[in-house]
Every structure is written in structure tokens, then in C-alpha cells.
Length: 501
Image (cartoon, one colour):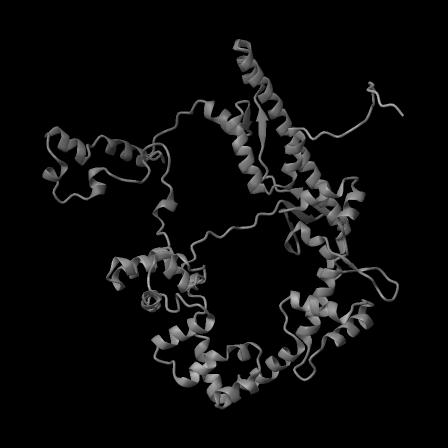
């Protein structure tokens, strides 16, 4: 068979992701904070975009002429008082300083004030930011460096202290090895250990510990309460965590009354001393969607308009500027800016509509949860919602990422409502995994101290009560995921600690 070149035409279809389409897809997954940051950047980049501002009525009221009114006695007094010169004007008339004319004057008398004038306005046009006057909480590193300057004498020790301070985590524990610090600085390991011993006396007590036991021991030593029996208790904290009171009493060689006193003393200590200086701002979760009861047992779904950015395309500005543009580069920039502005407004509108449709379908399928609680949460997947509203699963996944829904049952992330299904042993409907976890927690919380439920017993109860076919290892996985200890530890907790208390 001879090989020879030839020309051939083929026709095919393919989907090309343009930059605008990629931008629209990316906007779906952004939270409202990320979306507002993105829109702010676009407002600075694109001259044809402007933020939609409400308050058209205010502008009309501002243009309306003020009506003359009679002056009250108070207003007449204030107006006449304005004719009195202040201390600064009087001193300026004498060509001298204010202190020479009014030596006992306070700043308010001289005229330096940070308050508003009689019209309610501030000097400079803007009111001062009150957050600037709030005392800032000191950072842990700054607090410790100030103490290290007083404790340590040489610059070498202070350099070692600075590296140890940088090795602290948020709880105040030392996360770096002393040998690594010594090797990095070329210092002796004994010098690093001496600096660490000095820093462990700093405030707050327990700082620079390398374990929970060392943190508690530092605080007890400062209180002069680290006696041998207390030291043995610190060394056997794992038995205390397991609530193995019998083994703990044997290791300590004391009775239950002494152990109760020592445990009461441990409860007064702070195992995370660094958190007292945690100055990270508290971020409040703001819902993206509101769900409210409607008429006749229905639900109303509404987007939170307060967090949605609103932008407009200034076509008047585009028309006026495009008439004067002569350079081809300027015309191309204006055309590109107009296209990007139109695409952004359409993308934001499409994002809002998509979020509304997805939220409405979630509410429709989870009506039992909204009405009766988590026990009636239905199993639901991305595919079920996508097929119901004729969308792709990836679109539903992006819309529900980092989005929150405020319901009468509380504030939930939209991903919370998507749970796997657990088959029913009696042929009934499937059960939601979240509802099953809720039932397991209820059973464990209601168990008496004399009849602790094992994982096998819990699985059997779920099968008899609700027809939930669940294996023992699955019950154990759900229990551990909720940070619930095993039946052995729970039995020790409810028996031994009850005796101590």
C-alpha cells in the first residue's frame, strides 16, 4: 500500500471555554466575601462599571430648597454664642501663644476638639473611626519578647529566645526541637535549654511547654503543688483520659478522696495558655439564602440582598467617551471594557438565579427536616437536585460550596443537606446518614450507667426501631466521627466519675 499526502475536510463540534465562560463558572463557587472582593477589583479595573447605589429619593430631597422656619430660643442662643471668639482667636489677636493668655485652659477650651460641630459634621468631613480608639489586644509574641528582654542578659540568649517564641503555636506550645534551634544558631544545646527554662517562667504560666503534662507541671510548680503524687498523676494522664480510675488509683497509691481533690485542682489550670492572647478576628457567618415559612405550609426562599454586589454599566459614559476616542487602542479598550461589563452583570444575574433554583429544590426535598427536625432529613445527592432542575452536577456542587442557608431550624451550610443513603431492612425508604448519626447520639445520651450500649446493641436497636440495616463497624465509624468514646470508656465515665463526684 503506497503512502501519499492528501487534503481532507472534517466537520466536528466541540465546546471551547472562553475567558468569559470560565469567569461565569468561577463566580458560582465564590462565597459572598470572595465575590465582593472580585467585584471591587473589577470596579477599579473597568471604567464602565459602577456600583448600584440606592437612595434616589435622598438625592431629590437634597436638591429641594429648604423651607424657612422660625428660629427657636435655643437656636438663637447657639447662634449668638458663635460670635464669641474662642481662645485661639483671642491669642492670635495679641500675637502670642494660647498658653500665655489662658494658662489654665484645657484643650476643649482652646478649640481642639474631636467632636462634631452644631451641624453634626466633623472637621475634615468624616467622622473619626471609633475602632482606632479601641485598645488593641497585645499579641503573644510581643508580650513574651518584652518579658525576655528583662529576663535574659546577653544578646545571644535573646536571639535564642526570639527563635523559641517564633516556634510557638496558637495554644502556646513549643513546636520546634531544641536541637534544631541549637544547630541553626550554632549554639550549645545546654544554652538553649537554659533559655527555655527561663522562658517557661513567663506569663502566662504554662507557656513554652512541649506537652500537656509539661504545661500542667509548670503551673503546678509555680503554685508549689507539684508534689510526688501530683507528678505521678501528670505522668499518667492517659489513664485519666481513658477514665480508667482503678488503674489510676493503683498507679498513684492514693484513695478516691485524694484523687478527687487533685482532679479538682487540675481543673483550675489552663492547658492552652496561648489562647488568652488569640487576637484573631471572629468571623461571623452571614447566610446567602433565607428560608421562611409561607402560607398554607409552604416555604419562601429569598436571597440575602445585603451580601449580593450590584453593579451597573454606565452606557452614557461609554457613549460620551467613544465619540471622542480617535486612537484605535482606545477604541479597542472601550469595546473590551463594555463587553466585560455586560458579561459581568449577566454572570451575576445568572449566579443569583441559579442559587435561587438550587436552594428552592433543596427546600422542596428537605421539607421534612424543616418541619420536624434532623430525624426527618432525607438522603439527597447532587445528582438528584441536578436532575430535578435540569442542571449539571458540577454546577450544583459549585453553587452549594461555601454558601449558607438560614432556616427556622438554624443556620446550615448548603452542603449539609447532601447526605448518603442507608438502605432500609424492611423495604421502606432509605435513611439519611446524618439522621442515623443523630439517632445514635440520642441512644447513647439516654443510656443509663448500668446498661451501656455497645456498638452491636446500637446496630440491633436501629434495625428493630427504624429498619436501618447498619453494620457494627459502621456504627463505630459514626460514633468516632462524633467524638463519642467507646462503651468501655463510657462505662468508666458514668460509674467511676460518679463516685468521685
